[in-house]
Length: 343
Image (cartoon, rainbow, N blue to C red; front, top):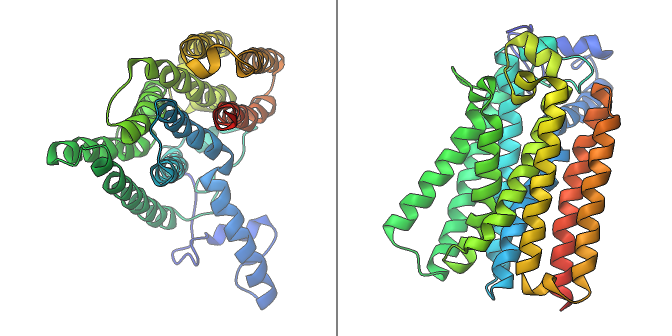
């Protein structure tokens, strides 16, 4: 698999960690240091900087429900918790899957992966994946138990549909880079992100508040899906050379860096247009003080991001755009929520 581990890893950390300048087991001092490093490694594997994006997608759907007169603090909180747990599960699975399939051996200029670098043992990551998948299931079932009766959709057919959607989301998160035939290596990751983190996250969280699907909601759902695809594309442009060498044929690899930047620009413009159309049809944002402010923010954020992309000429520069764009998406969602709560 491209890395060597201790046959008896302790605390999920490989013995190869000694090469990073300390011993894990020699003294009480080193144990304290290793505990801190263990925590740091798991935080790195969870990729905290991606979590604002996951929260923003479901918060957009919850806002759409509020604008229709439906809202539940409990359902909103459980939507956010489930989305964040699913994102963490996807990140851990990606770390494990790329190491297992050899992609991490070709990564240059990108943040190190925890399993591929030997910092976390594969067996420990498997345990973490099982635990996180269980937490996703518990959170999702709790969400359904609270939401479905409240919207009059507590029948077995509704439960079956939502359980199948939840199972599909977990399976899609794992099979992106893990498993025997990871679909991310065939270039279908963007489609899965658009569907699960766009359409289902936004429209689904709205439905769990209202019990119905509003056709207008597919505009912000599509916009969020495109924004999430942009984050994935930034990641894939950053890793384009290593992915190509490993046979990971992402959209960026298939298009080449220049084509991937064009694709990114089209996604950004498409998302902005979807949001603009939604703003024109949402009463809160069609007039009043929120109308110009929201449009100025949307245009400025899109143009600033595309300019930063144009001037990004290295993997490190592309990597810096990832957290910035995730936070921008969360700020946008927060702006919309603030406008709603202010009135």
